[in-house]
Amino acid sequence: MGTVLITGASRGIGSACALAFAREGYDVAVNYNKSKDNAETLVREISSLGVRALAVQADVSDSAQVSRMFETVRAELGTVDVLVNNAGISMYGLLTDLSDSDWDRMIASDLSSVFYCCRCALSDMLSSHSGVIINIASMWGEVGASCEAAYSAAKAGVIGLTKALAKEVGPSGIRVNAVSPGVVMTDMMSDFSDDDIRALRDETPLNSIGEPLDIADAVVFLASDKARFITGQVLSVNGGMVI
Ligand code: NAP
Image (cartoon, rainbow, N blue to C red; front, side, top):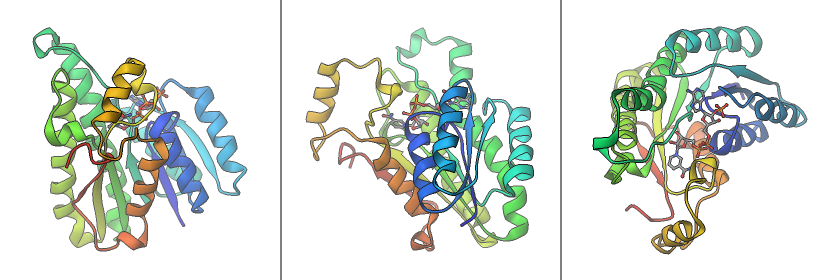
């Protein structure tokens, strides 16, 4: 099937994507930043499915670390056929309380990381005239969230980058899409109380909160040949919360 590199695959949505791709027969590069044990446990689980897996540490907000990560993956698993830009952080608070460094950290983690990884992946994809990139955005990048201005701006940037890059590299046989999750139960939701979660569920037409696998299934679909005529799109997976 080829090789997939998933950023931020040590936990949550990225981890579910890694397992879903492994079940499809892909070799999987599991990028992590701090959660080494999680990444190594996941790699063992993936290897038991009969495909190759590699845990590769890199802070994807750092361009040099991203370049090194791609060199490692290329040497161990071969060139990256599918790139999933999933790593990200969230940040809550009034815009007037954000410091310059908060803003810079958010843009570096959630937007510049996508640029760095796309640039590295494309150098091989352009020569092979094939490849798929899937960027994990957010419904807040589509409609904006109060008290999440930096996060919403970064994710809106991811959506803009996705559309522009799809136009740029479509003629080279490369597809670029975004998956835009709604509320999904991961560590990113750990600051929310049970009441907050219940309120979010009540606001969602399908009356449930998303699971990481809901997002992973959409990502695997967009990577597959079944999505061969789909590029530059934002696939919202949010239970109908934003329509
Ligand atoms: P999560 O459970 O908090 O996991 C975040 C992952 O990103 C971890 O594996 C973490 O790695 C990695 N990461 C963060 N910064 C990194 C960096 N600089 N370099 C490398 N890895 C980094 O989050 P999640 O909920 O699965 O979110 C995954 C993606 O979905 C994010 O882009 C998020 O914005 C998006 N999303 C989530 C939701 C939601 O409701 N959960 C909704 C919309 C969009 P380490 O632990 O190894 O440091």
